[in-house]
Amino acid sequence: MHRKNQPWRRAFTLIELIAAIVVFSLVSMVFAGIMLESAEAYASASEARERGERASLAMDRIVRMIREVPENEAAPGTPDITDASATALELGNGAAVRLSGSTLILIVPDAPAPAVLCTEVSAFELTYLGQDGMELALGAGDTTADIHRINVRLACGQIELRTSAFLRVALGGG
Image (tube, rainbow, N blue to C red; front, side, top):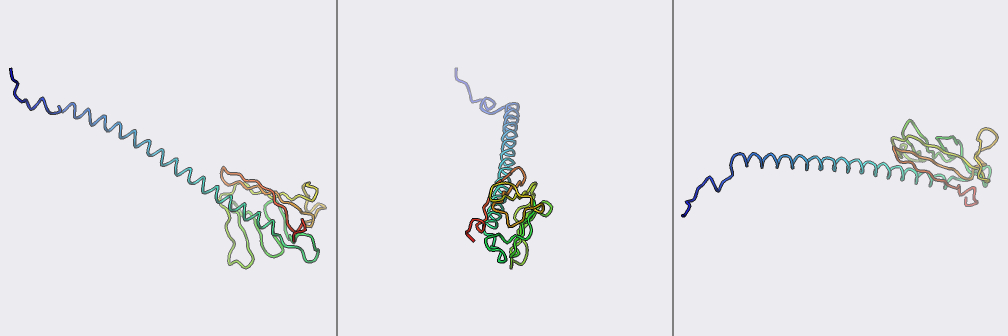
């Protein structure tokens, strides 16, 4: 016996079509959620990388400034530092770095305006060490002429950088 073409046998039923749409919708929602999470993770990682780069650049600029502290003309062989505190360093030539609120600022002589090194700074510390490696008590017997090395700690968000820089003038490199 030969069957005739029955059109309802070749097509999808309405129930099958609705089931396919529901399955496709569920898969699409899961895929969209994964894509959204991936985009958020990428944005977060990019922001953290950018903050780390800014903190690293700030640290490099500070270390360069410390190494290039000019020699005090009145007392050869000593650094020309006019102000040294836990959150600020000012040199005799007008250059300075200081924490203002949560913004780290670099002042460069002959520059039209201070440069913002880093924002959202949660911690910035300068520790001054003498020739023997011991921490100096500036204002309590020790002077800026005794500084041979400066330890720097900079925390920006979840990124914390620490370094130690020797003053070339204190090492005889003027």
